[in-house]
Length: 201
Image 1 (cartoon, rainbow, N blue to C red):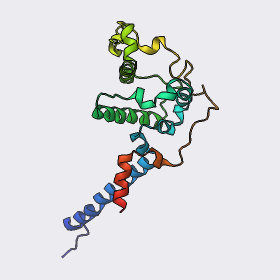
Image 2 (image 1 turned 120 degrees about the vertical axis):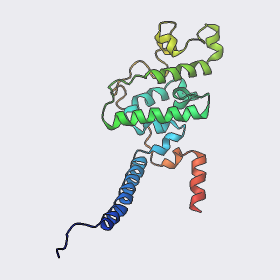
Image 3 (image 1 turned 180 degrees about the vertical axis):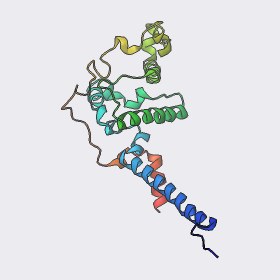
Image 4 (image 1 turned 90 degrees about the horizontal axis):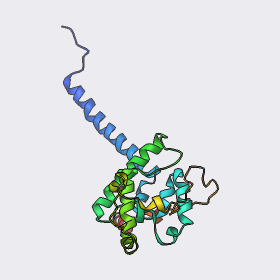
């Protein structure tokens, strides 16, 4: 009688019973580490300091902070939708994933330009905030798709200095002071801090 060295189906099942949870654990652990190291939780807030987690946003932050908008607005006032909370966070997640992919794979351009969905949102927000002013000059009906079809102009086509000035390259503001976020808890939304505090008790 010969003895086979082949693994029995029972041994294979035991192997996979440990392998699959181990791989899932590694995936969850790596995802958590990337979430932590990228300070992803800070993007749930409206704090402009979160926007300079990426070094590439330094010129945008510096020019915004010295503009008239820097005294009255935050990045999200212009760059995310405000018609409902679901659209706001969907847009933030979608745009953030796009940015993270570009920065991770070093695909960022030397001069950052808004893509079409971003232009649509910023145009909506210009009109939302300045509705009384734009209604007087009949610019309140111009949407980004209309402007792209040459049926009007986007607000910043005339107001070129607002709020990031004309120079927008990565080296436009080489020595501008921008905040370095040491205390990330300052960027965690209150509702998320409450959940974290309750879970620690």
